[in-house]
Length: 399
Image 1 (cartoon, rainbow, N blue to C red):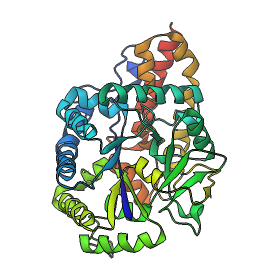
Image 2 (cartoon, rainbow, N blue to C red; image 1 turned 30 degrees about the vertical axis):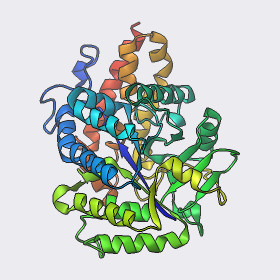
Image 3 (cartoon, rainbow, N blue to C red; image 1 turned 90 degrees about the vertical axis):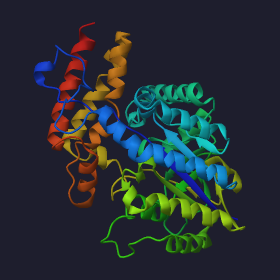
Image 4 (tube, helix red, strand yellow; image 1 turned 45 degrees about the vertical axis):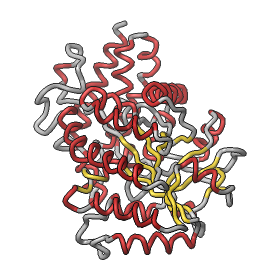
């Protein structure tokens, strides 16, 4: 059986407003204020994404669930996007609940605040994982069995942690430098683990949709369903699992409706399900479909971001390194304060997007960073963020 394993990641950050040095010690409202910036604030951005992506894609997914018995998928949802949806688009949450209630949509575990905490503060990392588990139980009534770290940031130590924490599986990028001659289309065992299983993203077929679908300079443009079906079927000769991992916002936001992305997805699902030798699997279904065919070792950290597939999207320059250092150095004082408002603000400042906006890469990677940023430059993102962290430090030391 040839199986597509569709995994979508849903996330929206809290963005630091134009927070001045003169606000430090005076105002503690870092994240949202009407017309706070020349572009858009969190509510306007969320509303736009909900209209362009969440509502139409969720409706399409419901349709696929209703009419294609073999269709299923997996989803990860950060705490920050759930909070915003509950506040500004409760209908989105209700649709997600209906989908999960079908039993054909699996929710994955992650950090509540989409943070890099695993690499800086293990206790904080685990606290955020437990917060996320609690939120998923509260909203959806399910227990996540598989873990994905922020931006698929993964190494051997993360796999061992996930196994010890009790997860049955973990996701990672199927990067060529790690796989070498092997295929991402199989289940693997992480190095140093005995029970947990590893599922790897098929980045070529995933990125054909997520990044290249509307790129008219791409030699394969336009991407038709006939062409994509042929590629997917051929790729199953390397293994039975086609692991398509991508942002939920691919549909309607990164690839706009007028590109034909929704029609492409609907036709692909229909035609793939029509073949008796093809189906869809959730992540857990894929992990249960075969025993690990081998062991994969990732001694250094791999992510699904940028051409380097490492942490340089968030830690590649001195501004980013300084911001991350200041954030996690504040942990002891912030947590010792017992001030839940202060702790919540500090955790929102751990959202990895803040550091992503400070990236100064060039060429295609730089274009992607700029596309996602609400700031005029990486230096503005750094300035406002560091002012907010100075106020966090002021508040924690004033206790």
